[in-house]
Length: 224
Image 1: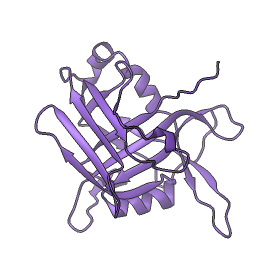
Image 2: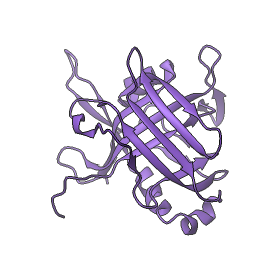
Image 3: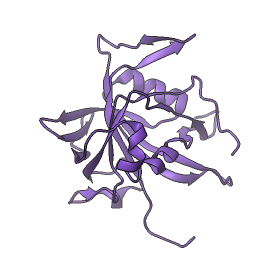
Image 4: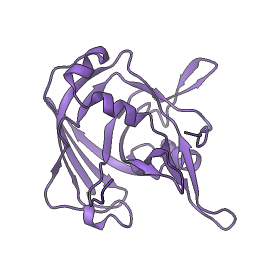
């Protein structure tokens, strides 16, 4: 309701351990060159409206991952602005460190995630993790990607919807320190910082055992 120079952002960082195609209720594991998992970092801007609409979306700023097949499909079908990169991850204890190096480039991103609370089942998460109900609502927003323009087609916005399954998941409170070393895209110059930035209060959650899926092809932008 008032002008502000701040806006919430969401970083999703993790391991996709069983990427699969689901057809007729049967899941088939996707493996590329014998590799059946990949790492990924996603930067989202939540609460973004599209054109003159009023519905909130999660705008996809960038996705970095170490799987070229997932990059090609994510960009061509969903407009996810994916790029191949080296995701260097270490997690000797409760602290996970992630550093991202785009192909033929120096480090662009780094983050540490420390688990600071007990692992709980989803039923207990609403009490144990104060922001978890809000985060779940954000995850339900449509993902807004862009299909770039070419000589025959204008730039096109495209919506997709992620379906989250927490049946077998566990969640825990976390503390993060994140630093954007260099801009991901034009217009992000002022995002680059010399020092890491912490998460919003209670705004970081560690998850494991989560399953998610989305329709292929995407269902498009649905009415509110």
